[in-house]
Length: 81
Image (cartoon, rainbow, N blue to C red):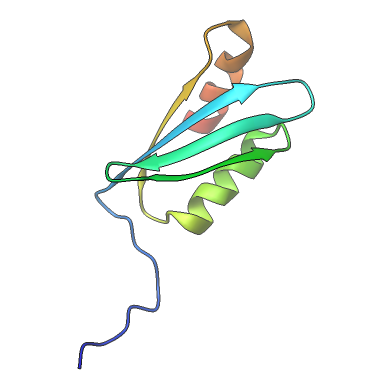
């Protein structure tokens, strides 16, 4: 019998995050190299997105993309930090 894995570990895996920025919410899509995980709406705060990624994809290498325009640039910078 194989042991069960009790902790998620996405080390060495790329996690891709795309978001559409609005004043009151963001539409976020999270994908791995193999599948689309989920599309959801969240409050417009980088910290909320970061917490979600760390909880659901710990150890992953995160890559973000946002809609063309000026309003997503600061979000990308905050996520990079």
